[in-house]
Amino acid sequence: MEGHSSSGSRRPGTLAGLGPLPMPHGAFQTGAPSKVDSSFQLQAKESAVPVPLEPRITVVTWNVGTAMPPDDVTSLLRLGGGSDDSDRTDMIAIGLQEVNSMINKRLKDALFTDQWSELFMGALAPFNFVLVSTVRMQGVILLLFAKYYHLPFLRDVQTDCTRTGLGGYWGNKGGVSVRLAAFGHMLCFLNCHLPAHMDKAEQRKDNFQTILSLQQFQGPGAQGILDHDLVFWFGDLNFRIESYDLHFVKFAIDNNQLHQLWEKDQLNMAKDTWPILKGFQEGPLNFAPTFKFDVGTNKYDTSAKKRKPAWTDRILWKVKVPSGGRSPSGQQSHWLQVTQHSYRSHMEYTVSDHKPVAAQFVLHFAFRDDMPLVRLEVAEEWVRPEQAVVRYRVETVFARSSWDWIGLYRVGFRHCKDYVAYVWAKHEDVDRNNYQVTFSEESLPKGHGDFILGYYSHTHSILIGVTEPFQISLPTSESASSSTHSSGTSSEEEDDSTLELLAPKSRSPSPGKSKRHRSRSPGLARFPGLALRPSSCERRGTSRSPSPQSRRLPCVAPSRGSSDGGTQGCSEEGLSGLPGPWTLPPSVPRSLGLLPALRLETVDPGGGGPWEPDQEAPTPDSLSPSPQGRQKLEEGGLGP
Image (tube, rainbow, N blue to C red; front, side, top):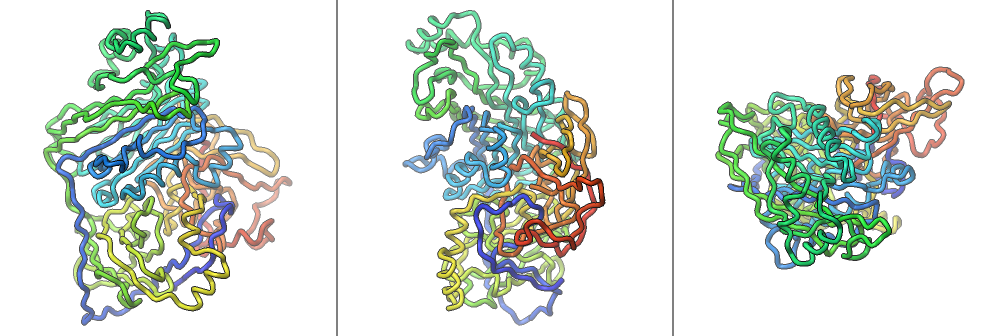
């Protein structure tokens, strides 16, 4: 493989969904292994990632009522402001409901990051949180963050989603989930939006049961949601307060007599009668009902409907009863305990008719998987291009992939594919299980800054090895300065201002094989010359929706997208309906890509053959054939 570099400038607003991505600015693709200089001495800076004795997890749920996001969410996430929660929290799960999913907004979100995800990534990145995974189903979104130095201990990340609206045809109601192995324990986060109204309690039970029965994951660790060692179930569950009238409910709230309302809360009553809720726990509801408020105020509904206040927004958890067997890491799967540290609403947010609810949990592990699969070594500082050498050691149990790569990240990066540059892990052998790679001079960032190196595993879809921060201090060349001035902005400034994102899988530098996803939505009709193809959660051609199985449409596997460990929920790569693998030109920037919703496929209206790469493209400046050649057609499903 010959070396390749790209020096194009970022163009905000480019149609990011048109298939495979170009390399990021200055990225370098390593060539054939060169002879290793045995005399080269590297001052080791090995990753020293602290594994917490008792990791803390924060869970947030918020029905945002199609509103625009607020300017600041630091108080919701308890970041800064003299609070040490940001330092003590290790993972954060954020479940949103009723994110604006009108067709024009969904089309925009398919090309750019949705504004809510952008808000939370921007707020958490300065506190060392990195987006681990995300999944979207129409207006239901789940975001999972972790401190970057915990990433080597998070593995087997998979997502899934289930639609229950309109009998399984519509994703306005249902559940989205992210599962993973954290420190050797299987965790699952499930964000649900269940049916509304007082008389729909039984329907809410049926929907929850449907979600639990349909969502399945790959691998021997835990296939069903309830197979996990720990499950967090949260969202707008829509349970109401029975028996009492509006006047009494408001009186109890005003006089802080909430305990009188607990016994008539539908979810509290159901815990004793519904077998499906056995084992689920919830902290005391010491905060006022979170629904329904007049938007922009802290006043309960004053409209003509005068809906009764209710605790619709809830966070519950369930610990699996120990079986005495062994966990995926080989340890005894017992002694996992959970303590709820806090459970509260945040009245200061008024953009929605719901108040956000947050809870913090402390996990007590009997054992911890604290052995990184890859250990990286790097010099304390790179002051010359020839120092850009990375050595790493691979554990014998780690199954390497030819699509693994090592990324260079600025301190404060947002997610695993928010790299400045990368090299393929096409290593040069140093000795047994020890390898090294070298970044090209062209790929290195100029100037001074703090950076982190991470080894991205295509198999695990996450960074499985990271270093501590180190410095790069390289002189800025005159040509680079003139180029920066002519473009009117620096690449760093462009990165900060650009919201262009693709699906998480499409940002990998590796082509990889796209896994089939499961479909839970009905098929859409083809139109002459255009096929509307929402993204899906289809795997192995099976349908796990309450609705009939959808008609599958062929799609082109992206030439440089990486798999996200199983299902990437209802969000796949962007537009990939072109009859061959295509890539944007080097002048188009890398996109992070989260949550596209719609893919457009060009179809010959005359019924002829597919559009060949040597034919003239409608927008020749934005498409060019991918160097990897054509990929095999795989099944593509229909999403939200």
